[in-house]
Length: 120
Image 1 (cartoon, helix red, strand yellow):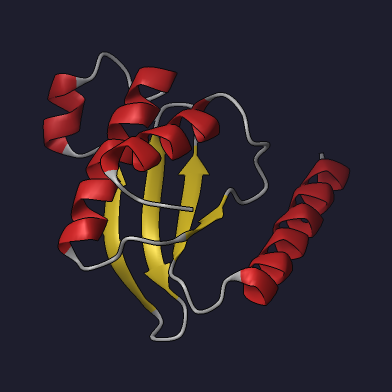
Image 2: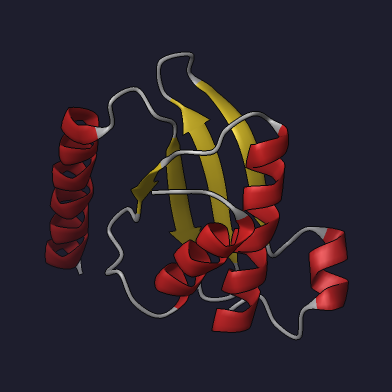
């Protein structure tokens, strides 16, 4: 178990380093997924603040979604986050998948954010 956590931490650090090199000052769309929910934030690293956030634990989303742990929920959260980010004046972001592989719920969230109007 400790070895797996070490690998995840190394992957996270490697990805963040690459994002810093290639971001060009754009905000970062960060994803976290758990066994029951999915969370996403648009973060301005220079100012150190969150510009927009959405998750499957919000009351409106809990009532609307069957579960917070499937691709449909991830797509809905991606679209909601894109709405909120555009309202905050953000249209271009850098996608930070964290230690997760780009498939399943993480890919569905990214596709939903793109459908909602964010470009990355």
